[in-house]
Length: 313
Image (cartoon, rainbow, N blue to C red; front, top):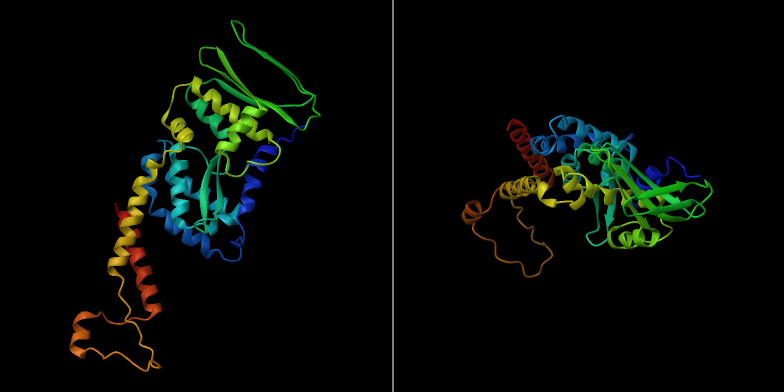
């Protein structure tokens, strides 16, 4: 018998294990506070992506709650979390219920990346928003009685044996506003081919039931009108986060332009030290030398000014 908690545990819980060295936010709440401050400046961008009924503050609150449940998210740079929220904003889903933030470790770049993931309930919600009356997706196990047919009288008959563990099929049915229903059936081999091509985490091992269900539900999305949210979820269009990436790049350039240069300290043990430049030339060409602490304080002040400017727009 399938466990109703299996989809959430399988799709989200196990994936989050990739996040090693998870910080304890209960012992260091400042991490959450810093993240909140870093995300607030993106509110104007989120408002342009979110549906009218969805407040940007709700999106950020969902992210902070997700960080408490999955502290490994805080291993990801704020920029990565901000871009992930932009994708969830365009989908119009809720973090923690229909969409989730998952920290993946990029072995090439050696950095954690915050990845947004919509579960099968998120797909169902968007398909219903697009005009469907109802959507249902199920996994078929070995030992179940399952048959289906196409033609002028298409049908599906599925009687669960409540004893299987090996998934043989996945199917989904969508009831349209007209009362007509459409369905898609995929064999375990067809689903596994999709898994090998698109999945980052689940290429190996037995086929999870939630993956079969979610893959089938994605197939019936083609029977409803293509809304902006459905297209974005299906294609993961990275153009939606372009404005945020441009802002981040502009901020980096602004910090770099205003960052004082540190004069190199000559090694006093060098037996052949270079001749020192005249004091007047040094004063004219080099900015005042600052300590690392002074530079860090100045960078923090610049970040606060940029955030205040963005919030005032």
